[in-house]
Length: 317
Image (cartoon, rainbow, N blue to C red):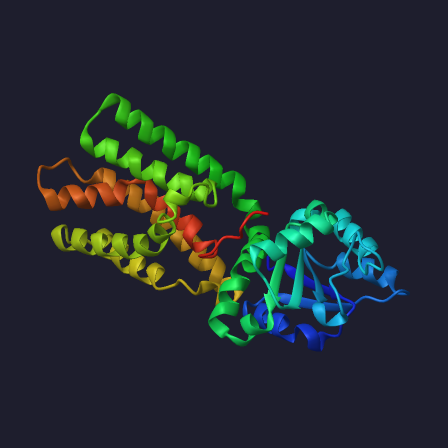
């Protein structure tokens, strides 16, 4: 199900047309709504049509008076959005600033603490950032991530059950057979879980997100070698489908029916690769050992996280 994203503001659509265009390019249904002093009932009705809300404010109005200050513009609106959708589905975009640094963010939050209590976060943009396509794309990634979290919610229980199952398998194998291969499996699994469950808890683990961009192609090449060494229809098919999946990084721009198909295919590949890896007999050959380790490593479950999240997770406030 595609989330419906509402953009709520006292400003006209022309002020945030850049945001509207960016969200439309992600194939979200976006509903802009202009807030006024006499349309609160329509405002509530519009919220109920949405699964995610963005409250937009521009500095061009004169100052950042969203809430908790004299002549604040959105005291009632922020509370209403949070009560109906929940704070995890409400964010605030503050536009046309001169400074979008962490210090500027903290200054706003210190003066307007309701933003921290009632929303999932605030996101600051300057004119210079909006004029640079690459910078703008990077700054929008945390917002896209939060919207996509709505899509992933139904899978969360299944996902954590899979994590628990494969963790038990890895620990069981290592406990009963404490050899180097199994210790390597557990180490890879621990590294991936650190990134998958926690966004980025430690600065010295900042290299871990790169695993998610390298891993699909690594598995593809390993499955190709495995098909070369063991030429049968199952290994050839595994290799072919991995190459298709690895080239599908931009699948969020596909229609929803193709996105569902690709997600199902990747789930199947992860489970089947794990199975194939454990079917390969123990060997003293270095190359075959590498193939077995890669294909049967629980770390390939990270592909779920890679393909259902953005490359730049939002920074917690």
